[in-house]
Amino acid sequence: MKILKLLTVLLLLTACGKEREARQRLEEAKAMYENKSFAAAKSLIDTINVRYPREIAVRKEALTLMRLAERGECERNIAYCDSLLPVCIEETESLKKEFVFEKDTAYDDIGRYIRKTMTVERNVERSYIRCGVNEEGEMYVASVYFGSSPINHTGLKFSTGDGMLAETPSIPHDGGMNYRFRDMGNTTEVVTYQGENCKTIVHFVSVVDGKERVRAEFTGGKPFSLYLSDSDRKDFNATRQLAMVLSEINAMQREKLKSEKKIKLIDGKLNGQE
Image (cartoon, rainbow, N blue to C red; front, top):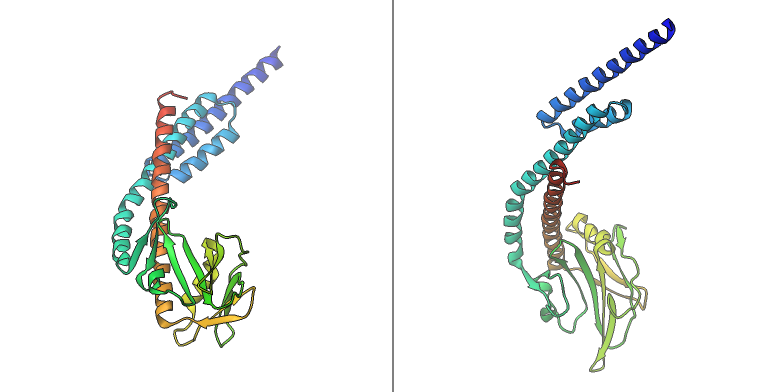
């Protein structure tokens, strides 16, 4: 009996010790939360749940604190987005002055911006490279061929005389991203490289020395090439700059919306609406 009583006392002491340890760590997590160190607070709360699985009361308090920390992170994200969005929007409006906005409401959900010098109307019946960016900040590049006979190209390669080069993936003829038509005895081919498919050649233009000529080779069919003009390169870099700002704006808007939705969810849980 004495041994049993002793074991009981030892178990109670151990339990009390575990509870004190758990509560001490919870107080540390609360201090981190008050100091707006939300990530550190969440990490310590995770430790409490792992190390003290039987301390139900402490873990319940820790759960509430975890939700408050997550809410704090969301509020900080929203404040960060609200502070930067006006700056980015102002920059975008300035950059857009050299672009025209195109959107066919019957077919397009998202509009696109293209430099005035690269619009179709200004480049009728000629082979050239054009680029643009949609409202979400995704760039595209199109290789446009015009000639008396088809070349059936499927890709685009940029190179310089010093051996630098960049190439797009092959885009098979599908009537969409790669389409062709004949009119008045001439052939027009337009292959569009969008998003990741144009990333390497867009970056290539941005890093090539301005003194180096950039040769654009239409690949996958009969040989054909042209050189980018200084105006082309200027248009590429301006479009890339607009794309980066638009992409940043859209990322912040998505993050803000995500944080707002998460706050509503957390508030429901804090108010007992599980």
